[in-house]
Image (cartoon, rainbow, N blue to C red; front, side, top):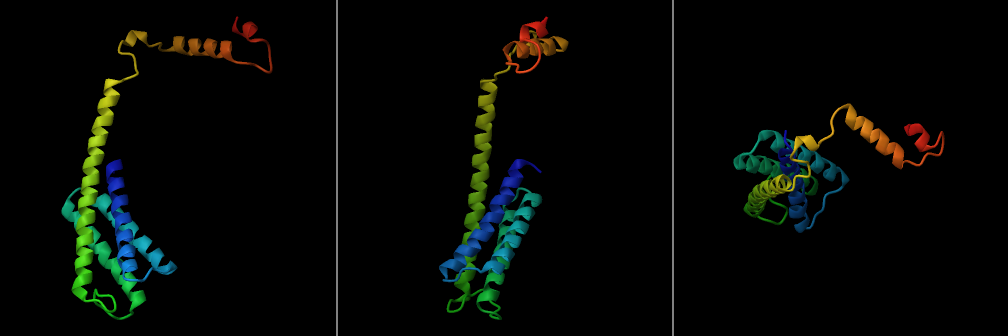
Length: 173
């Protein structure tokens, strides 16, 4: 699993939980502590699923949609037990389904755009690193083997301030 897939999974999991809380918060209800714990569990599962499932936007949309449905079911069960549909009390069901679908589509597009932006930034960073490579281009300039260890030891002894033992100049000879 690459860093990009882990970031994608984290973004999807975070978006899933944040959307559910925001949608239900706009309806006037915020989750309690037990609901928040279950939302974190669902968000973590969605994030892990997205990270493992791979790169297709369709899979991302499907997993985010499933996460939204689970989060809604968790929050709706606490608000209006037994209402069974996607509607909040006093709201039509199609409005809630539409709001979740639009939010899921927007998150899918935002995550895909963030992935493209991450790829572009990574390319620029690697190009700059290749351009300003601090390593010497001539291998003869490198000190290798026992000479490097002896040079580093003498250099370290000459600049160190010793509080114990013989003076530095006596130990170097």
